Each structure stands twice: as C-alpha cells, then as structure tokens.
Length: 359
Image (cartoon, rainbow, N blue to C red; front, top):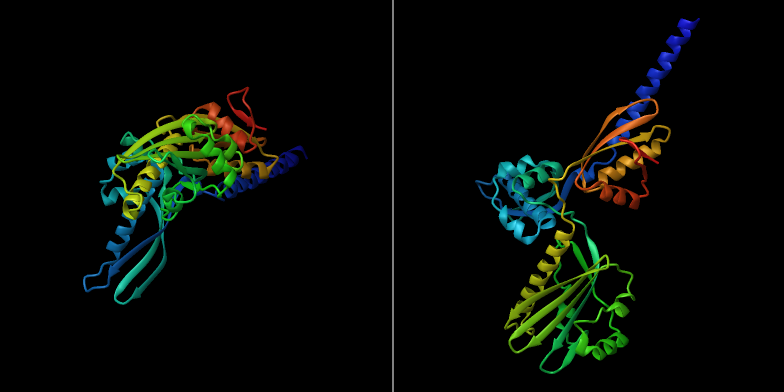
C-alpha cells in the first residue's frame, strides 16, 4: 500500500509541475511588446513600371522605419553618427514586418508597412557604436512661449504671438513631447506684464499650478532688431534647466523663417527630454527574484510589468519548484532604480536575501 501511495503521490506532483510549467509558459508569452520597437504607418509610393521590384519597395520601407526609430530613441547628435548603415544590418534587427495596405492607383504602387525591431539587437548595435539610446516616452508638457519686444517694452503672450499661433500647426509623429498651450487668460496676461522687469527670475508657479501637468517649458523670446534670444526654462520633476539659444535676423512675419525657428527649438527640447531618459545599456545588473506559485495572477502581472519596462534588457525563468518561480532579470540601471520603478507599479520586494521575494 505504501508503494502504491508513493506512486500516486509522485503522479500528483508530476501533474502539478506539468500544469505549473504550462501556466508559466502561457503567462510568459502573453505580452512581448516591450521587447520590440514598433514603427507603424510607413508609406512608400513607387511608379509601377516594367522593371518594378516589390522587394526594393519593402527595403525602402525598412530604411524609413529605421530612420524613424532613430528619431525616437536618439538625440539629434547621435542620429548623425549612424545615419549610414547597410541594409543587411537593418534587416538583422527586424523581428517582423506587416503590410497593412497595398494598392495600385494611376500606375503607382502604394504600400503601408509596419516594422517591428528587436529591442535587444538594437541596443547591442548602438552599444557597439558607443551610443546610448533613450526610452521613447511620450509626455505632455505645458508650453508657454512669451515674446518680449525689447524695443517696444511690451509682452506678446496670446494675441499677435506668432509662436503661440504656429507652434502646434505642424506636428511630427516622431515627436515625444506633446505641447499643451495655455488658454487665453486676461489674469495671466496682466500678471506677466506686471513681472516684465523680472521675467527671467520669475518661477511661473502661479500659472503652471492652474494646469494638471507635472512638466513645463517656458520660452522667453527676447526680440530686438538684431534677432531673437530664447531663454528656455525646462521643468521636469521639480528640477529647472535653463537653455539659451540665439537666432539672427528672424522675420516672424515670414512663415518659413518662423517654422525653421520653431523646429530648431523643438529639436533642442526633444534632445533634452531624450537625454533625461537615456539608458546606460553598458550597465547590465543581474537580479534574482522569486514569486510565490500560489497566485497565478501575481505571476502574470509581474511578467507583464517586466515586459513593459524599457529598462529591462532581458528576463527569464531560471527554475521553479513547488513553492516558487525563480526569475533572472537583466536590468539597465541600479537596484535602487529598479525598486523605485517597480514600486511605482505596486510591486514591492523583500530584499533581505540573494533571491528577492515579490511580496
């Protein structure tokens, strides 16, 4: 009887571990979006001629997708360092691609592509070039452009402010910053006019606090006969960074010159945001975490969060037993940053031992 019981007990344990491993497998493959960069809506149009080659069109789409990826994760200086790359190197970083739409119109071939780049391969390629990428995080910023006419001793905030009028007229889909312009408010106008002599020192909190936005950009645009000087106050997490930029002989009534000036400022602001979110991919910290098997939802949610966290270079299940599933996590940062980001997702750990325990 004892032998029969042992056999039955062994079978129960075997079935349990098979069931557990299947659960882990299915939970582990639910979401993998953070392991890739998804570039959507790449449009290519080519004349449909005798020597038409669809593969060449697709290859052009790959290059356009690669260029768009670089604008999302690299500042403008680093983009120029690797703008020359062989097609086979680009293809080596591509996981999948999809043709969303294709059609022939008036002897023209049109195709819309989506391209998925393997994040790990992209990071490895950039690291070989000694370039560190950024987390492509989109964020809303309160943006207040103020023209200070130094000759007339006047402020232009809403009315006749060309920057206010034109700033959001042309939006590039690769922009990470979404600029929220303030509403026209007579009280704000009078407040700022009263601060004319001390605008460079003013903190703008009375206006910023009216908006439910944690980040802001204040652009003080000093205008005189020699050109423009733009003093920018970028506020992120309570830290204010000042930036100065000069433009000579800009005619604000000339639409083309105004757009060039706006685009130059947007690149500066995008670069600052990307540098703020830069990932040190050369720093690969190995973390060991175990999760109790009693709660499948906890396992599923934990893996979902790991999949969606950009600073996770890679993770895998190293082993499991009847009590715990053991994870090995490669993280591009310090333990403190990992714990902070996980805490923001309501994931807390007991860190007393080598294998941290998800609580």
